[in-house]
Length: 272
Image (cartoon, rainbow, N blue to C red; front, side, top):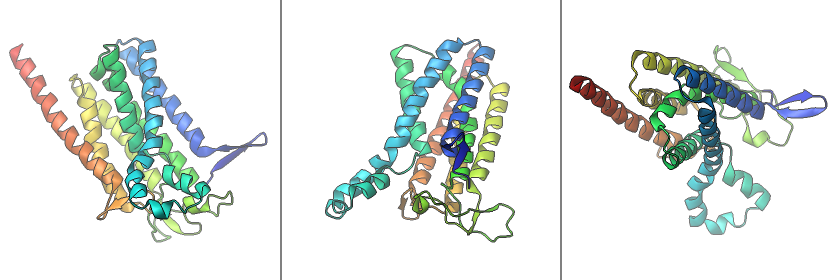
């Protein structure tokens, strides 16, 4: 665990630094791909900024939205919790799926409002999404969040976190215990997904295909990874986490979308 970098007397959080690095790399991919696809780079960057703004809002708001019904039902109990303890619990950490939903909604609204080619922009953005996400997961590894279940110390994917002394010990991985390096596994998986998406996009020029491939692969991947999460901050319903429910929805919608656009593409080719 390396939650901070000490630079010129300042403690810089590595999680935030990796997020910024991921955004920068994603922007670079968008710039490169927009040029290769003959799309104006300025318009692609503006759309990316709007998408990121929506993503940040969604990642912050999804946790309180999910927890609000519980707070309302058990208000008598939660009203007794000190505000300085309640707010960190209620808002929790940044949630990737909330960011994905928020970013998607912001992009849809922007494209519809200004009559921008949504699917063309999505095709440019899609490979950048898992790459940027991979950097974010490296940030999780360094910060000690989103950690895996306990494993034997001899496991090659085990990681042992040192004790943290910044007052956030209760929110991060337990110290001195061999844990599965789940954020690292997810980071590598995201890079692989990005490669598969670009391969599919090279094989087919059908707009929206990359998005469906991403939803299918990441939905299945994330659903599986959730069984190996060791933290308890993401909600569990009947043994299934909130992220697994969202993963199932994304996977199902992506399969339907893949079938739809594949049939539509074949129909257009036969007509021509």
